[in-house]
Amino acid sequence: MQSYDVCECCKPLRLMERPTPQPKGSEVLLKVLAAGVCHSDLHIWDGYYELGGGKRLQLLERGIKLPLTMGHENVGEVIAAGPDAKGVEVGSVRLAHPWMGCGECRVCKRGEENLCLTPRNLGVFSNGGYATHLMVPHPRYLFDIGDLAPEQAAPLACSGITAFSALKKIGDTVLKDEPIVIIGAGGVGLMGLALARAMGGRGSIMVDIDPVKREAAIQAGAIAAVDGAAADAADQIRQATGGGAWAVVDFVGSSSTVRLGVDSIIKGGKVIVVGLFGGDITVSTPFFPMRAMAIQGSYVGSLPEMAELLDLVRRTGVPQVPIATRPLAAVNDTLEDLRAGKIVGRVVLTPAA
Image 1 (tube, rainbow, N blue to C red):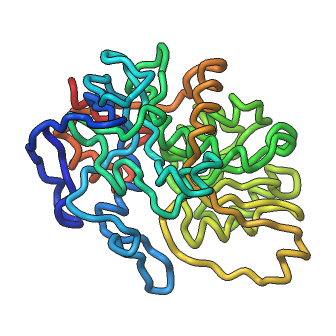
Image 2: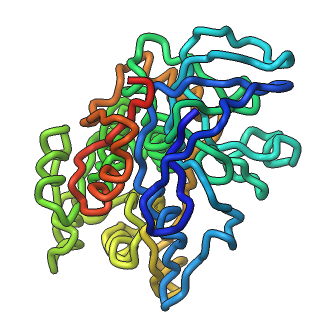
Image 3: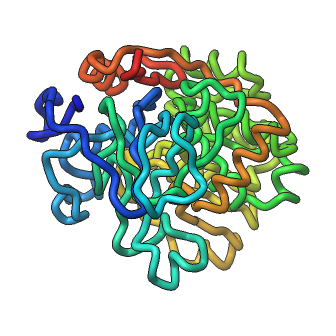
């Protein structure tokens, strides 16, 4: 098998060749058909996360070890399964849910493996799909994609489930009765825009500093698009929401975007921080009770939420997010394009092409 691995941070991913593994026990081996390229991979590639104030969270502090095959948005064809892998057939095409825990702790047993303290996430803590083959430890992480094309389904494993889980934290009443604000019109933000509509949302106001992405958001159905770098961005958001936003979902997660979210919400409003760009903010503590406000984090999504998301997609159609495909060998150029902000929507690598 072939893979492109991070062997040294900030250096080009290296083409590796090794024997194709054979599944044991409950393991399932996939031939990778589609592997989405996610902005969070840039943090792994860099080797750290910005914490603000000159502080960084290093890879080793998160338990990430090199060399690593990244890629956590994967769809593949089942080509082999261990003797204990039940309910999956060779030749079937499956989406691999990447957000895996130990499977034994209380968090995992209540269905929230994405919050496990000993994660095994594909492409992060174990090898992922920037490769010709991918090993999945158990069939419970594999989902039937029905009639979806692999390149359409792959982004649902991160972009989709991340946006879906964050939107669920808004609550049905606010989502259906009030316009929400989405900060960041990249792949996840545009996915959030599409899913909010599919979930019965009233409408979304998109915020981005890139005019090309703001235009893409308007074309995708946003009711308004605001330049996040504008001096009056918070005023524009308050005007567009009729006095302030009840919910802001921040898919960037920088100091300036979280601050903008806090400044834009109405009394009783909520800011949901999803993005990992990095930074810090200071918020006066009396404002939490006086404004009845909430700042909440949201980290990817759970196994039950993946099932919910795929059911939603079956009922309402695939989210209309721009998707381009490239060969696996283009992974380094794709990561550089992503860093430079040249990608609108999602790029999906196609190792089997």
